[in-house]
Length: 60
Length: 259
Image (cartoon, rainbow over all chains, first blue to last red; front, side):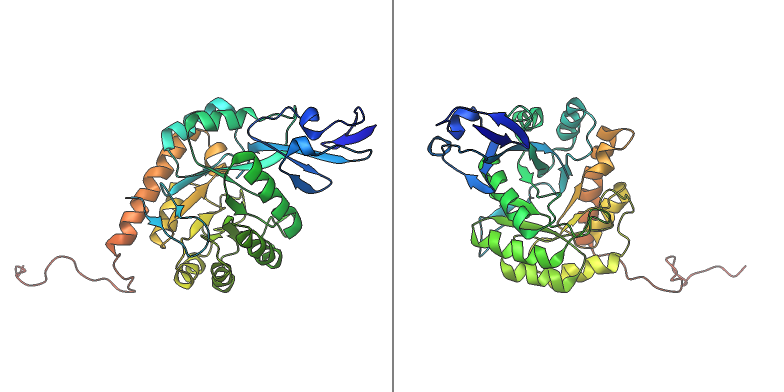
């Protein structure tokens, strides 16, 4: 099953949750298909999902 | 001492030291760490970007080590929708409801889209954020943002990264007069005198990023800006003499010798 992670295609297993895809770290946040996700364990990823994983970078 | 302002909406917002520092344009983590150590800023801004290895950035680890308060921004967002989503992601990642709200009108001028800004500010205030909007130096817009429940307004002195200083000081004074919430001069600072002027005009804090990060000696510039905001605040409180078009003798005229 293919999804997009930060704009890059990635193949994952069926039933893969967001928590499995992204080892949870403080200082990181995720959006799936444009919506902020709070509980990563509850989100089972689906074919074509667009996952964005963000952290703090330099910026004014 | 640092004023703690209780607001009707949002969490109590502590300005901290009136020098705020942006990490934009930094050349190395080590230099940025030295800058923060030297300047002890009230807040430090960061942007939210894709995590290369899906984990937290080295910058974030350094800032956490330094124990500074973070102010995430929504830099680069060209719509209210993007800015609101970015603010929500920042809150999740950084565990803060503070946000420096930027809705950029176009990527060339980097000037605020105030229509989008007002819309995004309303949504974020309703969602419990402490909203600090980057805005044009327009007293009407500033008053609207204050009415919406923003915790401060951040008018620009001149375009982002331009180093032109405050090109229209009277506009900053008009913003100051228009709102009771803190005014934080954002964008355009080039050197210490610009920061001092902002405070002399009645601003409560100054945010500087590229003025420091792209200076030849970032640590020295950070120190100078810290002193400048402190000097400017003292001068503002001291009450400057009015400007006059003619001279006014400071030595007494009485008692002069006849020569």
